[in-house]
Length: 149
Ligand code: HEC
Ligand code: HEC
Image 1 (tube, rainbow, N blue to C red):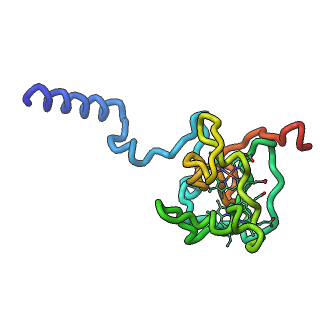
Image 2 (cartoon, rainbow, N blue to C red; image 1 turned 90 degrees about the vertical axis):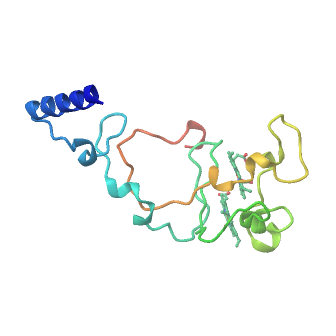
Image 3 (cartoon, rainbow, N blue to C red; image 1 turned 90 degrees about the horizontal axis):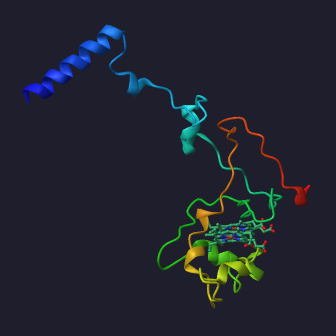
């Protein structure tokens, strides 16, 4: 105990001597991996409104999970019920006007075809996301894939 508090005291003295603020970590700005300061408000999903319902968005690359062009408030996915499939399943899409889930969503991880949605595709929001009006956190040079220009 004695040595521990001794070390702590030394550290405090050293920090004070160097003029380092002791509570620096709490006040530090959030930085991206490339060192750009990140807007803290941009970290709070509640600060941005989800886009209003609109026509399906163009894809940026062919393998992209299409973006969700509508609100998803209250569209819960539980063990017993998947609200997304209530409209997007092959049995429901005609009456709801939703795009039917992709055929690729019926394959298990070994490529075996299943008769219902694959467990690995069950949690739709893992890959499909609605959009907000948030600005990109940092500048980037992302461009649409060649095949979709
Ligand atoms: C009440 C019915 C309904 C529910 C529930 C619903 N959707 Fe939709 N969804 C639609 C309709 C309608 C469209 C638009 C189809 C069109 O205009 O071509 C759509 C479009 C989409 C698209 C765009 C498809 C494309 O080709 O670009 C995605 C992705 C999507 N929904 C995902 C989801 C996910 C994920 C959920 C659950 C969190 C969900 N939807 C729940 C009705 C629904
Ligand atoms: C692991 C990622 C992943 C999950 C989970 C997932 N999807 Fe997809 N989804 C994709 C990708 C990637 C595509 C585009 C390529 C393709 O068709 O496989 C796609 C395509 C789609 C399309 C467009 C089909 C078309 O004909 O253009 C719809 C609709 C869709 N998904 C709905 C859903 C719904 C509803 C769920 C949940 C039950 C879901 N997806 C779960 C990745 C995913």
